[in-house]
Length: 203
Image (tube, rainbow, N blue to C red; front, side):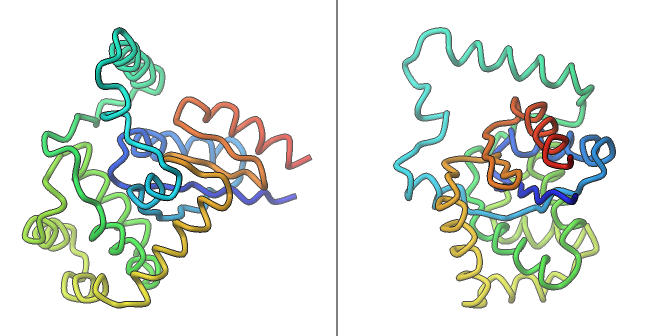
């Protein structure tokens, strides 16, 4: 039996990027595909009264250091070398997330995702600057004019809002979040449980 697995992502989340790097191996082992679902993380935070870890961890002793330790463990476990913190963080991802909706409609969604993630967390750039976005799209061989025009389309804007609202309705409060059937999991450190849930639902 096929299992529906939604991956709620925003390019601004480093943990969503790291999950993106690990997902192909899970897909290969389980034979199931993840449905990449763009959401606006700022919208999720606003609707759930949540804040980013950069804010929530301020002033807490030891916890930020521990999270860095866990990050290094994750990188080592999955042999991830193409990651570095974006010096422009936090980056406003509104335009590039709308671009993801355009790419999904136009049929180059996977390439767009890979190229945006690369330029956010592997070769970090300021992806809330329209000139930088345009340069990245051009270098990637993506249709610059179509994308930059598309992100101003009211229906594209609304579709991203609808995705974000639906995610919150399904229990999402941050990214990365995974919905396996009706079972919700949050965070890159739950990917093992996500894989186990996929296998259990296949039976």
